[in-house]
Structure formats: structure tokens, C-alpha cells
Amino acid sequence: MDTKLLLDWDRDHVWHPYAPLRKAPPVFAAERASGSVVYLRDGTALIDAVASWWCVAHGHNHPAIVEAIRGQAEKMTHVMFGGFTHEPAVELSRRIARLCPSGLDRVFFADSGSIAVEVAAKMAVQYQNAVGRPERNRLVALKGGYHGDTCCAMALSDPDGMHRLFRGLMPRHFFAERPATRFGDVWNPADVASVERLLDEHGGEIAAVICEPVFQAANAMWFYHPEFLAALRRLCDAHGVLLVFDEIAAGLHRTGPRWAHCHAGGGATPDIMCIGKALTGGALTLAATVASGRVADAISAGRPAAFMHGPTYMANPVACAAGCASLSLFENGDYGAKARAAEAVFNERLAPLRALENVRDVRVLGAVGVVELRAMPKQDAIRRVILESGVWLRPFSDFVYSIPPLTATESELRRICDAIAAVSALPPGPPPDDPDFHE
Image 1 (cartoon, one colour):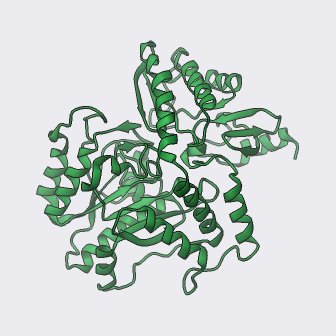
Image 2 (cartoon, one colour):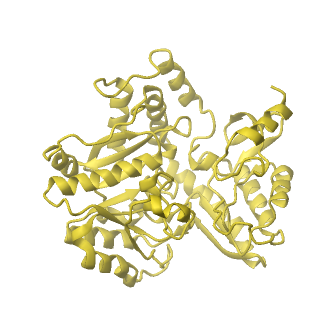
Image 3 (cartoon, helix red, strand yellow):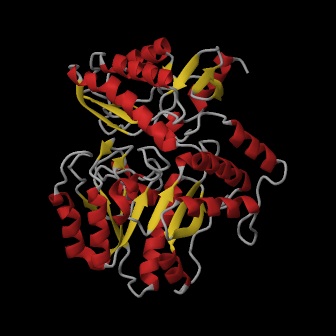
């Protein structure tokens, strides 16, 4: 297809995430991708500084994952999981259980991270019903959090964030203040007072507490003190409430250790955990909700005994094969070291940007580098930086950031930092036409 025809049709007929039709920001026509680089149809090469929304952990088109997909596609591309099982699903569940904290080994496969969160919320409510507490059907989440774009996931995301338009559509939950103590600062126990108050006042209605451990991603780009997680664990135990960790963005070495909650040591293991994004190395959509035996056994002994969820494409065998290959790479490579190497480059190259007039803050943890601006520059100016630097950035709200493939080289990381610096040095643009617009 002619590139102009492709882009013209796309502009008029194809919706992109968080974008209008026709008046959408210009998009680039991608042709192929390899490693950290996306190649456009005109031959332009762009380093993918955001790992295609944080999922391409091993780089694009990793040969081990591509070969796993090819091999499985030749045998069976899909079969319903209601009544059938297959080796890719069983093997992937075994690998997930091996990588998860001890006791988390009951795996429910979902289509996406948002659905994994929906499943976790339903698990928590069905668990409470099974143990004789059906009135416990609401959750506690954190302000500043983001858990996805489906109805339940939106309802658990920051109530003052980008989903305000849909308040009438969403169920109502409780929201605690996000932890104010930054990662690396001295822990302030008062950070947990808001959650404690909600549990004291509404514990009889609450099934679970959910949070993104340590790293609040798509709403706040905020790193908080891991001691908050240990305090949550103690509070949940005291009130008979389940603890759910959304590790979709932060898990699989993005912040350094295998799981972000590992920053808190062994005292903060969840009852339910959601994983996704890097699960297949970004090759195919797949997520999982992993529960403890206590949760799964209680649900299975309740009425109904069946867990009440079942996606059409649950445990798709091609996606599961990709997941097995991805987790094999994680198991056999020192990805913690890769994250620490990225952290060192980000600290070195981004910290000086604090001196820029339009920079409010710089935050780094593992392979995540964030520059918070006072105001976002014009989109046309950002596009020029992308093309001139050869680095694909996707700023949102007031954040210009990088969450690159964990396999990015030091040279690529430095080029990413240079591009972030160039955007950060641009003059602020006008206020957005729509103040509720997130991206």
C-alpha cells in the first residue's frame, strides 16, 4: 500500500489510543522492528524509548519468542479453554508459579492487563462470599493509581484522573491517599493512616486492597517507599481483607528485582497478583491473575464453586508459547543487572535536568527514568525532537520519560536521555484544549 494512502485512511477511519479521529496527532508508519529499534516505511530508525508501552522487555522480535510463536502456530493457533487444556498453558502456568512468591501458584489466564485486574477484583469478592462475608464487595485503591481502561479497572484507578467522564458507568470503591514518602527517603508511618482509617470505618464492606507496588505508573509516574507494602500486609491481615498487587507495569525486573514488591523484602506477599505486559515479551497480548491456594481453595469450596469468569481467548496457545519463551529468557538472564545498568545511566544523564526552567522533578528507579515538566511543549516541537534524535518518545500529562527494552545498550540509553533532555529544554506549550485529556 502506498504510504500516503495508508496514513490518509488511518487518519480518517482508524482510532488510536487516547486520540480523536481526523484531528489526531500525526502518527508514524512502522514497517518492521528489531531489538530496540522500530523502522518506518521510509527507512527512518527510531529507538523505542518506551518499549511499546513497556511490554517489549527483550527487544522487538526476539528470535526465541518468534520461533516459539512459529512452532506453535503450525500446530494449533487456538482452542477453547473450556473443556480443553494444552501444553503451552500448563507449561506457562508452571513457569509463572516458579517465578512468583511462594504460595502464589493458582493461575488464571486473561487477555490483557485490564482484564487481569477485573479478574482479581472478582476473585476477591467471590472469596469473601465463599467465606460467608457477601457484604464485602468493594475495594480500596490508591489515589494516583492506574489499573486499566475496562469498567472495573477504571473504577479502581485514580478517581480524579482521565476516567472522570465515565463515573456514572463505574462501580464505586474507596480511595486512600497515595504514599507521600519517596522511594529512598526515610519512611513515614503516617503514609498508611488513610488506608487504616478506611479499613476501620468500612472494613465490613471491603473485600481487598489493590495497589501498584512501589511504582505508580500511568497516572502518576511515582516511586514510593516499599515499607508501605509491609504496612498494607499487616492491615489487611488484621481486617480479614485480601491484598492485591498489580505488577503489570512494574513486574519482571522493570524496577530492578523480579517483582516490585520485592523491594519490601519478604513481609509483603500479596494474596492475588496481576502480571502482564512483559509476560510475552510484548509479542502477543496475554496476562495472568495468580492467587494463593487459600484464596483458590475457598472459592472452590463456596457456592458457586466455579470461579465466574471465562474469556473466549483464554490461554490462547500461541500467546502461551510466547509467554514460555519470554519467561525462559527472564529465568536464564540477569535482568536485574540490566535494570541496574539502565538506572545508572538514567541517574547520570537525567539528574542534571533538574536545573532546567521547565523541569519540576526527576525520578529514577530501575529501568524507569521520569522527568516531570511544569508544562508540556507543543506536539510539533516534540515530533521534531523525535525525528532529529531518532528516538521514539511518548510523553503524557506532564511527564517525558523512558521505560526502554531491558536489553537496550548503554549507547541507546544515552541517546534516549539526550532526546528527553531536548524535549525538557523546549519552551512550554499552551495549556491543553481539554484539561481532562491524559495523553
